[in-house]
Length: 159
Image (cartoon, rainbow, N blue to C red; front, side):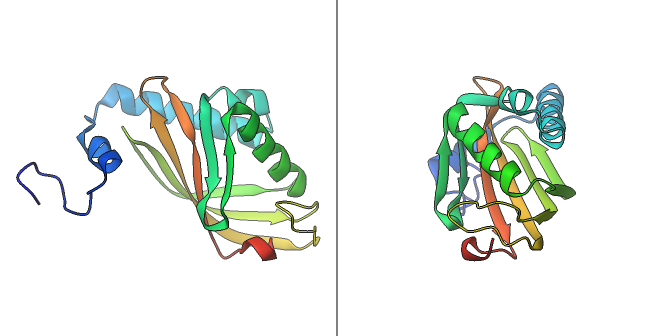
């Protein structure tokens, strides 16, 4: 660790800023409750309720697949595509970490690929894979700044 107490691996400005955020029980509760609202809205296919948990300039991305959606319009496009392609998608939470930086969750996912998605034709196959999703916290707007989704066990050409 350096003299400021920041691990050397946290060399990026964003990581340094995130590490400096104070841990506050009220903020923890606020972030947890927003994540619960977001998750319940997603489970109920309530897109307006889900979008209400996101900053207007939110970003959704699947970095390994080079896919990115911006703003409420982009988030709506992402969810409409996902929920149409996989109408029975189910996320089974296996791990969750909540802090002043946001939420990080791991979930097992099951879904049937019923419609085309991201340029991949529907296969009708039942899929099982894992996601790790980071919901960055927008401290100014008190909302999530989007989702960064990391997928394991599923490639973009084998959706």
